[in-house]
Length: 68
Image (spheres, rainbow, N blue to C red):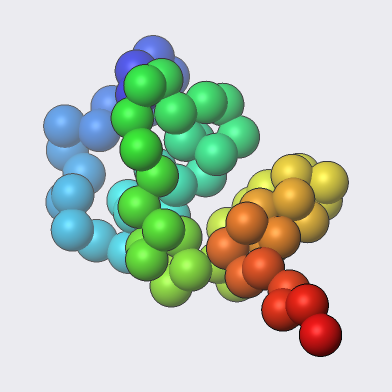
């Protein structure tokens, strides 16, 4: 993921704020050939700022409904 408007070199890569920022960027603006870490996405789901339609679609992928 390439980000031109944020200097990530001064950010602690293990901090919650960096992880949430990176997940938001990857989901909203594209993965750019990288894979999304589903466990981190599930962990920080409630704190992500996503488009409502994209969030609904992602919920179907992360937590599929069981057919009865």
